[in-house]
Length: 365
Image 1 (cartoon, helix red, strand yellow):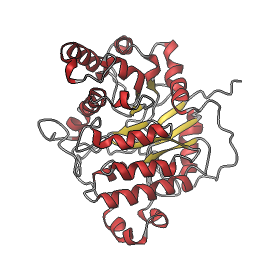
Image 2: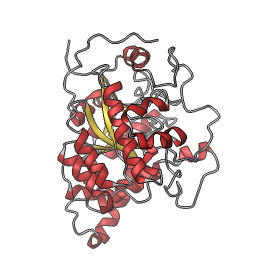
Image 3: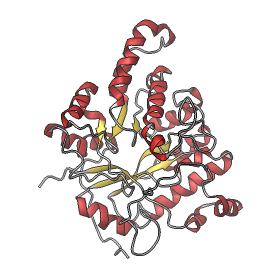
Image 4: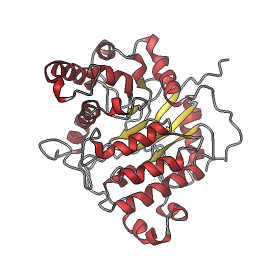
């Protein structure tokens, strides 16, 4: 049997069972603030079906995603997943708290908690270094502090922001990530919350459905900014992971950027290649929530239009309501591409070349 991983899940949401769990890692001066406010980025839209799967509540108590041992049984073992990239739950929006000092200490406390509470449990868990993007200098120091941990495989921040991610304000984050050989990932869910701007150029959607439908426009804006501002020329080793933002928008953006660049290249003289080439080389996408056209062949046509089989990685979004089963989600995708998406592309990005050496795991409640 091959020692090469067969399935790598690029978006698994681990959660803090209780706010008190973070206190041992948080400076005492901030305990009252944390217990009273939590991440405190507020707002949001009500979902009538909830955000979490109803069958993902650990028997030991706590919210879905808060028990490592239960998650191993309920998700990893059930579906034969070799590695899961932990992306947090309810904490990413710390960047949108109006107090950047608070955002910095909570991000650091979360990272220490993650290393102690999850990464020590099983080698199948791989961590994402949470940063407060509202303070890029502090975020860069946090990346340097945590990057030496062998199970931290990327940097993560929320996709909701006050400025587009290509702007030079954020460059210290990318410099630190590139210096440490880590990709930078963003995850949605905070658009229109806290100190971020409205989630659309024309304001706020009315319902969760309307908000959820339109999330890819923020990803388009950030990728457009990263390319046009020359981030990938300045940091040629940087990879940018767009988690949970869909896929079908990518050809449209590539075509539009390439067409306009031919006439307006004087506004981005630092670019040495076509914009679509930077996207193919530096941007990675995750599958969940992959678009589901009525004709499955249309999805394969979209993948052909992107022209980069290495860009897409499988993600389940466990334990959220729109979770994707790895045994079902990629059936519409042409057979020769499925294994690249299920594991090979993540193996290349994260360097997870061999299956984990599994030992004893605490029994789940």
